[in-house]
Length: 259
Image (tube, rainbow, N blue to C red; front, side, top):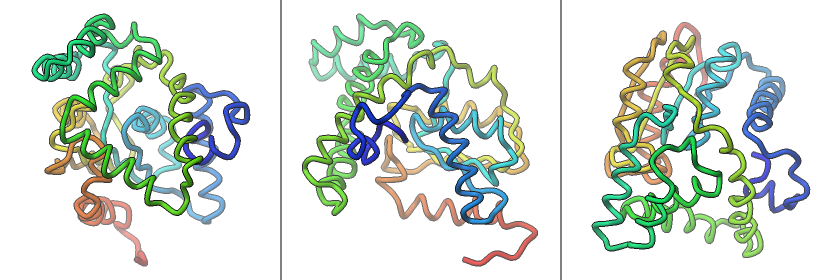
């Protein structure tokens, strides 16, 4: 993704071009077509996570010719501000732990994400994640921990990683108005959601409600235990089991496939 991680480290802020939702959506289509041509295949599995699922649902709706299945994790459901359960739960956790400054910040934003600036959305996500022990533990040990241990990341690249997050805030501009239910719940491909059972950022109950409304040739929803957000990274062995159990049979049905 332009503006993120090693892409940001290599090109810097001035080398990323336009960093908007619309531009990154077109990037995703372009990269998909490049991969199809490079591998010489007709379709690939679309497997987004977290805010990537906001792109993912739109890619799956608009380009069924490109993808053999949709596999969402940390599934984000945009509802144009109707559902405030995650916001309410964040406030409750902050109050319970005496985080008065965090409470004031979240209360000042209000519960309607359509009114949030990209910077406010970023602040909310950090407070939401930081107020939940399981999510915070995953961020520290799995996300940040992997950066420190990766041979691809020097200290300078780790710093660039976090600078890139700031640049990427602009991608959320205007997405508070998105409504996944109104945009459509029919998908012309197998549809799967594997969600952290204790996800506080994108609650499993919201993902399940959307999944139940989905019409697809094949579909399955599974909870990943002992996991909040970043469930596939915290429990990779369980995520792989679900891919083998549900996704591989769906995409290889009716043809011989090599493993």
